[in-house]
Amino acid sequence: MSKAFVLIHGSWHGGWAWQEVVRHLSMMGHRAEAPTLPGHGPGAMRVGITHQDCVRAVADFIHQHRLENVVLVGHSFGGSVIQKVAEEVPERIERTVFLDALIVEDGHCVFDELPADYVTMFNQLAGASSDDTMLIPWEIWRENFIQDAPESLARSLWEQLSPEPNQVNLDKLCLKRFYSLAIPKSFIHFCHDRALPPGYFHPRMSSRLGAFTLIEMDGSHEVMFTRPEELANKIVEASVC
Image (cartoon, rainbow, N blue to C red; front, side):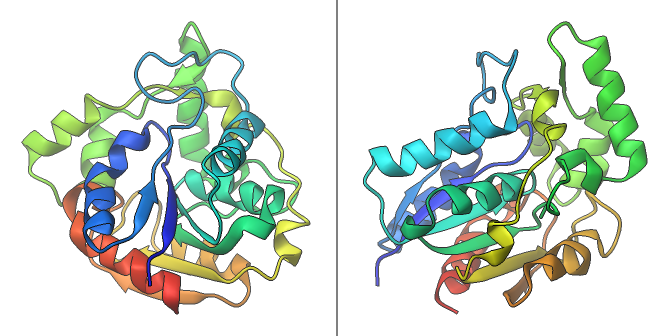
């Protein structure tokens, strides 16, 4: 059966990051959309962008494209976005799928869920910028996010990343409604992900979902680039469990 997937990217990325995954999902007969969040992507206006701006843009996208029975997929930071989108348009969401994603606790912000050294570094980078944005340093990207790619590919992708509006990580999120929703949930864990310490995504983040379907696959945090066909297959699997 054909599914409607909406794929939400993580920090520093844009909808472009899903290009190969979208292609594979389309080849399998599914509809796959990958919007770029406000303040993200090349040339975007980043000043003043909030977490709610990102949430509202995705909810509006779903309405404008008349999407129903959506499988809402969030990677990394995108997990916090799909939590709130599920609250906004629950009647249109068939399932949420989290890909080594941040699952924020009620009343917390994204930075409340990250190791202190990351938070300090990101805030320092944003403070040194002219527009309160920050970009992940090359060395961390290479060694912790995409260590399974050839260096030439890792470098090319890093050069396509865009600075992240830091405010989206500081906004406190009321998530009481999300944690009361009966929408089915899946979590796809990347077994070689080094973006956060071992156990951070699973089981620390995943366990917050309550009842959920767990699917695992090999690869780093950036499997949409290094294993796009396998990831597409896993997303489909996660959508029908």
